[in-house]
Image (cartoon, rainbow, N blue to C red):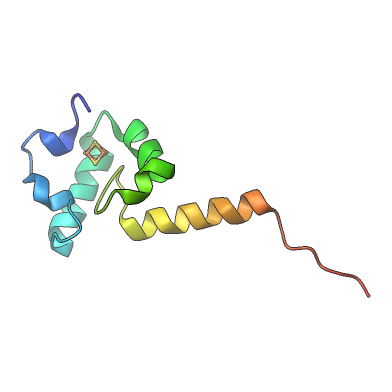
Amino acid sequence: MDGAACSSGILPAEAWDTGASKEDQALARAICRAACPCLRQCRQYALGPSGVSVGGIAGGLSEGERQVIRRNRKQAAGGLPCIKRP
Ligand code: SF4
């Protein structure tokens, strides 16, 4: 994406990768959130069906955070479980 902070050289691009140290990922995440003009589009992509294959930090979120959001969305889309009355 044009203007993406992760390709600006502010931090090595590997900091956004799955194998980056926790410290690097924390920095990458902070940069996403504070300095990337593409945050919204990137997050939408990363949380969408195509973004499932994206690893590491994307859209200011870790893989784990994105999984939780996806799971919550699925549950919300499915509604609350029915409770059978006796
Ligand atoms: S929000 Fe997306 S495009 Fe922007 S720095 Fe983070 S990973 Fe890169």
